[in-house]
Amino acid sequence: MSRAVTLPRPVTDAIVARIGPFEVIPASGGHHAEVAARVIGRVRTVFVKAACSDFGVRSLRFEARVSRAVGASLSPAVEWQCEWGGWLVVAFECCDGPHADLSPGSPDLDLLASAVERLGRMPAPDLSLFSPTARLGFATADLEGATLVHTDLNRANLIVTAGGLRIVDWAMAAKAAPWLELALLVPWLIGSGHSPEQAEQWVARFPVWRATDAAVVADFASKNAAKWLRKAQENPVGWARDLADWTGRWSAYQRGKASAERL
Image 1 (cartoon, rainbow, N blue to C red):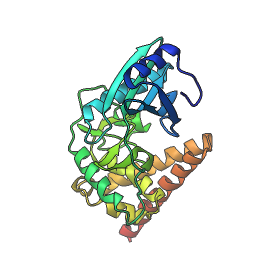
Image 2 (image 1 turned 180 degrees about the vertical axis):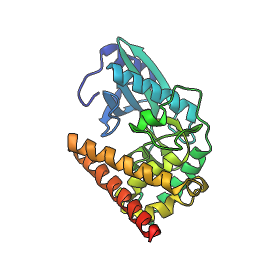
Image 3 (image 1 turned 120 degrees about the vertical axis):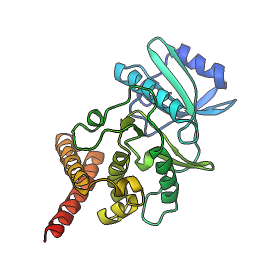
Image 4 (image 1 turned 90 degrees about the horizontal axis):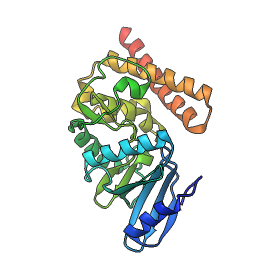
């Protein structure tokens, strides 16, 4: 049932009671939980996350609450959840489809734009969401706001379904200014093949981005790049090095723009 652990029998029985005998296809993502897998039952297929560590249980409980608040038009529905012997098990609607292609010219970018626009109009639910500074690990200007911000719109969290784009993994959602979502999206666009200029042109379609002071954006880009450079030096795994590269390229582009404007 798990990448690294086995669920206790009572939890397995709880899953069987809901969807019948099942087989499991472990997922490559879902790293806030000990278990993340597509569970194919006789009655239906669900995506199951399960956790037993203190951190994992807190994160998964938070994710389930935010997913319910967002609703099934943007987030997979929470089908059911149960607890047994220190385990929290949450079954999400299983969204069939590929991860979004965020490369230049991809039709999935239009789906992303529609989802981001809807998300930008969504007030933060009455939950204990992350503050911008707690989520980012640094402070910068104009981050406070009342909007729900997913904060991690990488392509692995974007699934193209027959009913539109679904956003998964709300474990790091924050209450913040809506431009923060776009600022955190820029490096993922760069990582998908956009130049920093192209990435900024893409997010500039949103009025909230155009209304954000250029100096605020430049300060954010600089601090975010410094954070990921430090993280990549401390733990040089591939994804950290990638984010250090992409955020660094964006920050360098911002510095170049500022220098050109002073000439």
